[in-house]
Length: 103
Image (cartoon, rainbow, N blue to C red; front, side):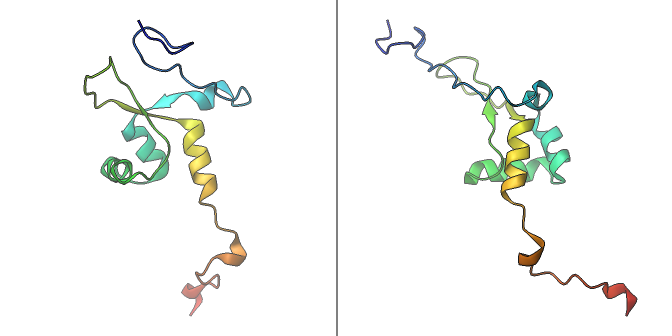
């Protein structure tokens, strides 16, 4: 029997509460391939980011304690947050803004 108060007997902690302000459609889970397509990168790039501790937050779908599982999902709202955190204001962008094709 698990002695930690509020935890189920299998020892897996309960999932933290998610903000209720996130619309249900943005809470939907997508696969690595779908997330990669949304971000414009390859699925392999997302796998590399996960291995380095980068990229959007993800969920590893574990069937039970102690068993390996390769199923990974991304919550659309977590992808949105990750993108917004990388937004660069135009005044800080080091790239030229003039139209170089006019030359």
